[in-house]
Image (cartoon, helix red, strand yellow):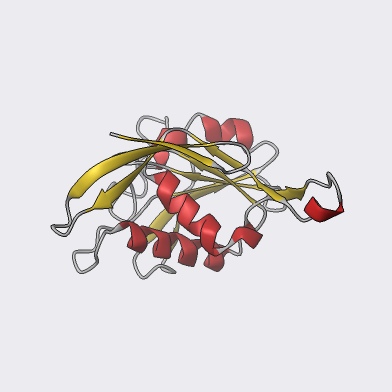
Length: 182
């Protein structure tokens, strides 16, 4: 675990925040106006919130930018008695988001943050920023999710628990999926 006061020669100057909501000491950055629209940045593997160090100042002028470190990454704890499956990371993020009362979230996801963030979006679509698209009365409730993502990878595990194959998915603005198996 990286020490909570580490700034890496001033390149990560954000005040550290911690919560025990997911059952371990989880670090996060929380910058910008608390009444602003929420941008939730989810890092991939093997990175941590430091990945978003240039994005945070630019977006936090007008938005609330929240950047958690997943369990076992960055300044968050690495509990030895916990499992680290995708499902566990989704559970942790869900507990985090609920504890902070985050709503109207725009997800910014990188790599492994993609499946974690999409797990949250599937469980709580009402917490993800959306707008109605009233093309006609039949489609007036259609929701367009605010999701920005770099390439996301979803791993399909075989019976041995090791990745059997990798699927690379790209999400369109309407959340349809195009995928390729490698």
